[in-house]
Picture 1 (cartoon, rainbow, N blue to C red):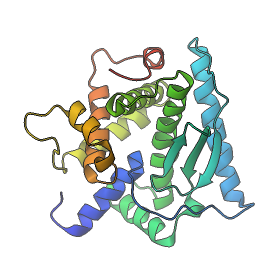
Picture 2 (cartoon, rainbow, N blue to C red):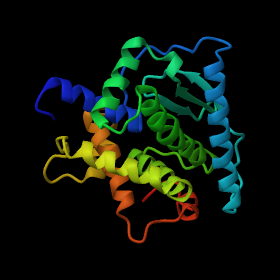
Picture 3 (cartoon, one colour):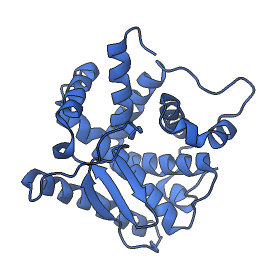
Picture 4 (cartoon, rainbow, N blue to C red):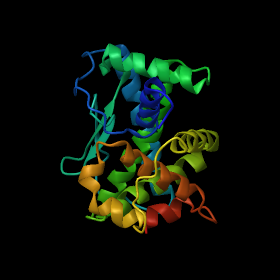
Length: 242
């Protein structure tokens, strides 16, 4: 993907930071009574509350309680479990020193003047967290199915619409980063196959590979190219798409 291994490695972590790629990592928990973790929890709860209140302001009523937020270090940095209504999200304090160092190198690669922790916060506690909450909304609407492409595209569509309405500058930065990364990646869809069909047929195999990131980023960029752009109300009304 890149000219050398270091740049390729950094790109993999850029993907993980922006979306939550399935990169193996021990599922550790932050130290108990950590003031920094509690501060992060408060921020995440506030963001979750805003997401839910925004849903209600758009005329919808969730059928599930707000998911329980668990601060740990899931392999994908974020994961919503619909069977238990639990949302796992990584926190900086739970990352290994090696993982933290990787985010520091990533911050240098992005050259945005952010620290490794700020880079982690921007991607995981904003984009990944809202994406996973979008899966919670799909569960509220009983819109979970074996059409993995439709489920993932719908979650990306909701997350993008939310951030366009709440913080368009953040969504603009996220789109720009995704365009930068996907331009360095190999297009994984075989000639003659549709992306949707290939994704659904190979979902389990794609999960732990860079190709999965290509699909996720291509979905977000496709969402951002819709004309006209869907409103948040439209994406909530049709949580899986197409």
